[in-house]
Image (cartoon, rainbow, N blue to C red):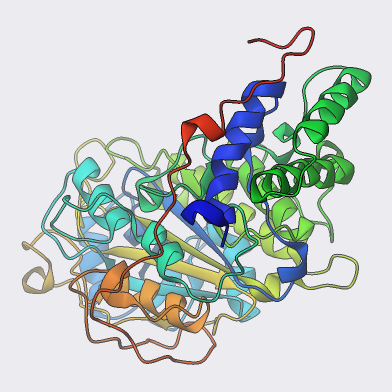
Length: 458
């Protein structure tokens, strides 16, 4: 703990912004921490499919009475069970979209699992409301000012104090799940973490800043640690990063985000949480018939990316980083059971969650299937929810991240009951709210030092 009541970690978040102002660097676009804390630390990647992904077009019934109900409700959209586009059989009852072949490969290898009929139990078909409820971790309430990942980080007792910013958002802005966090950093690519300009000019910047922070106080030490982190990232030359083990990422922004996560994991600089957004799932029109079309393209990108991330991290200089990786994929809600007149689907309720990782009990479909008979549907029109999304996340929090403070992370949620999706030890859940570690507010006067160098904007 630093003097004046400031933690080293909290100070450096502000310190990064100050140095960025002095030197034109993009220090606020990356997270870094203590190499000594790595590599045996868990990393959680949360992928949010914004727009309401159609879970019944990703994983659908392929047998039994529900298959008949499904075909009747989705004359054009139904996943086929024969032919070139037939669904992959997951468990005899449910099948996976043919475009999700890269995910099926992970599923068969025991590294990926499906949770069906999962989601937000609150009654809303508003994108904004549903996303806010899920990311705040407070279904039905928007009163909390912090996101569930923020409350996890503030109550996790097993994070080394040297970590400066353990959370990274690769989508250009901080999601609601990390709302209220001074430790969450928005970034696009690790190569943005540098000093701008000619190498000689950058070296003068470094020299000036290191002279400025050449002292024995906690302030000087924190500034030096920040500059050291710049050196580490630049030395790693992330702009010349090449995926390993034959991994091929999608050639789009989603692929770039996943590759950035892989880079940060391999650099072993303290990242514990990463969030990625993938939009384009509000498929009211022309979703694609019989396993083809726009939705299939979206699924190809999603699942190719998941497979590439796991492949890329599976062996780097003899280290299998995928063993400490857990990826959870979710959306704000599913789509209507019945297709609409525009060959699409409308806002629904229950959905699919995907979990991928080196310690996932994969090759299984989890959750209770509710059935698709009219009387079994939610509001007689949507897939019902039998698994609260917080049940899945709580298991990951406890078994993988070692944080039992569910009462703070998900206020009002009780009855911890793991489905067995991930490996790890269970801890006794703490349902009473705990006092989070306070996030320090850095005093402006301590950060308003400026070094004016030729060509640097004042």
